[in-house]
Length: 193
View 1 (cartoon, rainbow, N blue to C red):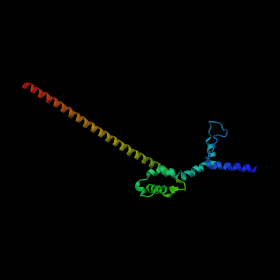
View 2: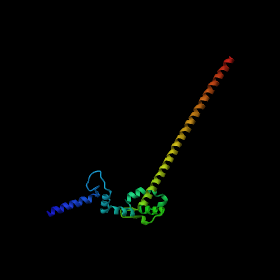
View 3: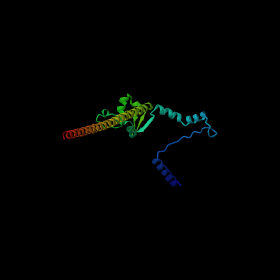
View 4: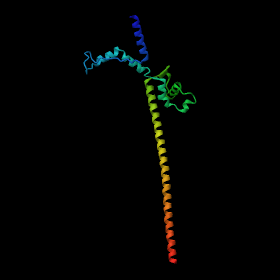
């Protein structure tokens, strides 16, 4: 029985190591557990006793955003310019240093862990806004340059069409003039005869 329990426990631990468990706290809406009836005081009491209110308060005061280095770098590297890099190898440390200087924040507003970066809520909001503005500005530049390219292509087309039309009009005038001159020469010859 003991070896069976041990092997069962080892299998459970192995399963837990392979997964990323998430815990769900169940809150009873009322003491009678009847549907559609909420007792706010009872819900608040359960949240307080389970430590959720304290966890929320700590999260607000602490580092609200916790993100993997790679994900953070992909999201906010758009805020770096080539002058910011200055020939150095880009990385999470360089990104944090440049953004700290640019936003005038200290290390108290964010911390770099082994695999994650931790940011305060206000700083995370500022970074999101800056990244959004940078992407919009890039989209505007792309849109304007594509409009310029379309205008240039249209202008080249119009110029070539106008040149063709002028050439065609010149050719038509020359033909009319040649036929007029030929008719005049024929009339002159007929009068002499």
